[in-house]
Amino acid sequence: MQTTSDEDLIAKIAKGDRLAMAALFERHRVRVYRFLLRMVRNEAVAEDLNSDVFLDVWRQAATFEGRSAVSTWILSIARFKALSVLQRRREVELDEEQADTIEDHADDPEVALAKKDTAEVLRQCLAKLSAEHREIVNLVYYQHKSVLEVAGIVGIPEATVKTRMFYARKKLSELLSERGIERGWP
Amino acid sequence: MTTANEREPSEIELLLPWYAAGTLDAREAQQVEAALAGDPELARRFEWVRAEFAQETSINEMSGEPSTGDVKALFAKIDALPTPRQKAALNLGARFAEFLAALSPRTLAWSATAAALAIMLQAGLLAGILLEQAIPGGYETASAPTNVRREGTYVLMRFRSEATAADIAAFLSANKLSIVDGPAGGQLYQVRVAPTKLAKDDLMRVVQQLQDDKVVGFVAATN
Image 1: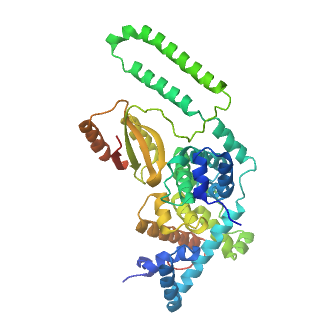
Image 2: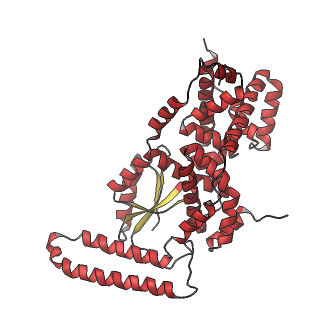
Image 3: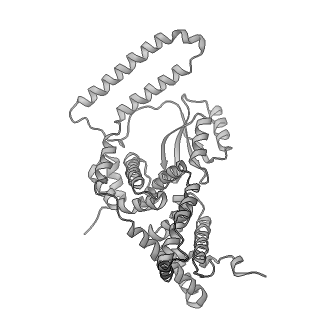
């Protein structure tokens, strides 16, 4: 079965084709929503931003030049919208507050047991990363974006993409170490 | 003495996350595979990368999906967009308001006349919009090209990645700029720098001034 490419859908959307808009939305809505959710950590806000992102796709479809994949372009829009929300919320303070609210049950027997579940601890530590680090980890691991595509979305050089990902992983190691899991560098 | 924690990562090590995600090109993937085959320590670290990859995927899969009504919400927003003709009317109204705001005290004596003209103009525009809406089949898409001639001077601008939204807002306000479109490819925004068409030399001065601001990564004149 042949499916219409994202680029073809965008061309149709630029002409006002609502069916194409619905198709593109259906194709990308979940992944973009999850990217937004990882950034803003609020389901209602993420969902509202999600429709705002695709509203921009509708409005700007005629300007899409095809220099990047459509999904990369959409994530660029999503990133900008998420950052705007984070700035309004003073994300740094929020990050610290939220990191503090993630309970550390160091002496809790149940969690002592849970600590043995490395996967669970790793998920908790991934959740505790800063917005900047959550963003790049999500783009690389979940959105499957190449170095070049991440550079385009985030607006940084490719070399910086690699080192930012490395330092995100280094921070992850530190968080794991605090939970008693030593994995070495990074 | 160099400890493990001070060691700089190799280029291959930096690529491990993308290797796990399958987004390296064939040449780079082969280089990583060869390195992993010959370096047990690197292979051990790669197991952690794979674990991270799996758990990040798991976090996302467990986070659920947007509600099923989201497509309705999207099309409600699309339907609420002004048509090109409405946008043109609003822009003209805004320009007229700016013009009034810029009047000197001496000319304020004429404000009553100007206000009356503004009311007449707005009434005419509103009537135009209503007439337009009354025409059956007159639907126009938000993204369809328009024939509206935009007055003013515009530049293409990209903000520095480290610039915060607050920085950008303050910069736009301080320089009396307004974003009219974007971001397009390369995170470029179309920004209006003057309500009238500036002479080339004046525009170049403005571009240079904007380029010197710490918020701006790139700026270029478009007209």
